[in-house]
Length: 133
Image (cartoon, rainbow, N blue to C red; front, side, top):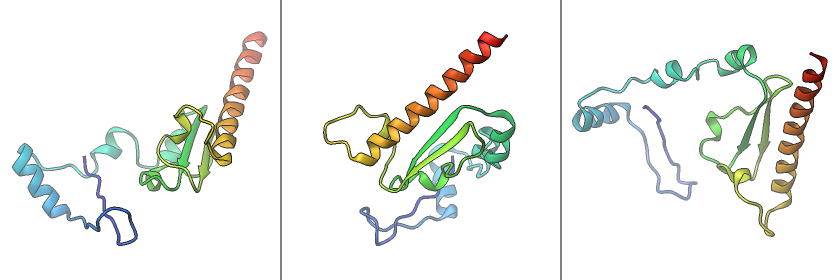
């Protein structure tokens, strides 16, 4: 899988650059194959994800912390009424999934409450629909 990653001088990690040519040569040497740069978007529908989710998705929360290095590839805006992006400047990878502690910051407590409220609404709609059918 091709995942170009770099670090600037402003990162906590040492600066690094990315070379597709070097990456390809390394793959050939280690695994005997050339990388397929568009495989991930073909296999997992990453290309035009908003369009695909709008047509085929529902009841999803994309929780994104902008301090997460993966956030650039995340869903950062609502796609529909039931495909919601919760974005926080201070969050990081899966922090909202971790168990709560007495030291949790206010923004994290509020984000978890938002997630619970959204899921509760979906469940209420589901049970209301069941009663009508």
